[in-house]
Length: 341
Ligand SMILES: [Zn+2]
Ligand SMILES: [Zn+2]
Image (cartoon, rainbow, N blue to C red; front, side, top):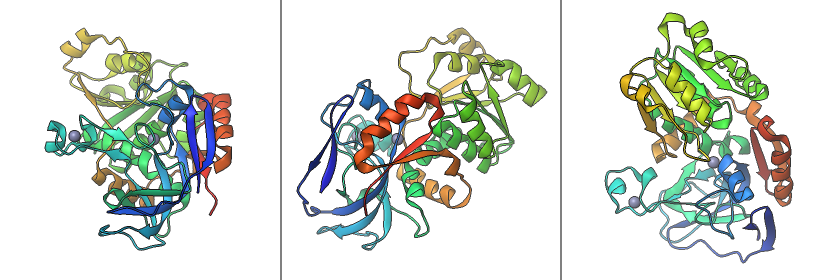
């Protein structure tokens, strides 16, 4: 079995590994396709603070059940399409005791602090599996993970029906949040970015309004688009200080800003405005199983992902995939790695 080991920043080695049968409670998956996400790119650059090397990357994937280990229960039959949650949680810390496994004090994520799915055969505990509809393409299966991130973020925002919503950052996660907010009945959704290409993709996905905040400030744009109604919900998916600051400045008093982006350094925020305007700043971290199940439903019914897939690379061209991402910067959305078989 071939596997892709990242031995250090910028270096992937392909090696042969023994085909171990699935252990107690495990299932063996033949991996079909892997999505590359922003966090993976940080590991490639050596700028991910919590990932030691060597590491097998990959946490967004689709595959086929190939073998079922002893004691693995309620498992989709052999040949079924599946994906799987990448979290490894302790089950006994305070957040885990409250059922908030996504913020486990001892959280490990496959592809970062544990080996991920970057290999032909992947043994994983059966309870992590999520069954996919037979109609799903490998692209759709690999998109369940990022869609679940967006589903979880929207659930943290409460009921979006009838509300005006701003999403800052038109990358994959921002795009998906905008689509889900719309599917959940938001009245009007504005997506902002500083790159026109990503905004064009958001338009192709049916988002109501897009604005390049290099051309027009968020405050000006939201005044023009929402008028007196303003907006009381913002998702900050850019991970940029200026973007967060513009949301604090433009959102109506009492509004909520949900932090989804990853910040390279701690942003400076005008907390005097946050205090006086009773703005709620809240976080969102990964997802729960229920978010994955809803993500599958959204992918079946209302989410358009075709415009988000920038390019496919073969498994043994994973390094070229990263070089392509590095060369094309913000023009890239989702890059996929395809496995043989
Ligand atoms: Zn991801
Ligand atoms: Zn825990």
